[in-house]
Length: 267
Image (cartoon, rainbow, N blue to C red; front, side, top):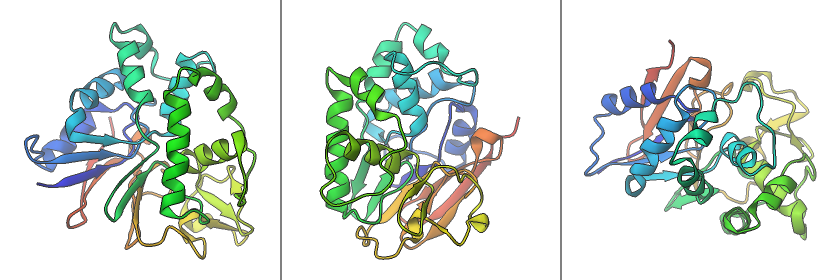
């Protein structure tokens, strides 16, 4: 039995099929972890959602920012953008079931030493704090008042985690860190403007996973989101967004031995 973590799909079914052929995926023994952003960007959002949902017992999925955006549009909390590619979900007869299934996915998935989150973790969080915050967000997303939460979820403040932070500010910062974060200022503030390559991070910034005194140390964080970063592997990190949405590659890593598998998303 093997477990494969897979980078951001963004509605690209054909690369996923080829990647599964490449890893010789065995549906009777293997498991798949998806780092979020199943939807939006590619032409196959509906097919991807159906495929993953039908294999719910074999898969673990965390929510990404594009997944949350689609849920917010469906709930009337956000408007559709011209570049969005998920209208087919809203028009499908099983669309409501798929949206409900997606809304009940977690923000964080942890098994043993592996913790999967779409974007990252604030350095001040212990694993237990991160998991509790994720659960608190999930309660709002999965409750009857979820449209109200989705409307309040958007915004860039607060940008810095402080002990004692509470209310909607705590939840919004949690969502932003877990689904949008790439870099922090040296003072620990979320910086949403930077979307570039690791080598272009300024001296006033740091990648979230380079922050000193990270309290969640001891787990390997599996993430996606930052396509310009590409695949980055180190003892405490498996960053897997290799830019399939931009026609680059779709990446899987086998957790047992960290073997890497990739297929092209071009064409």
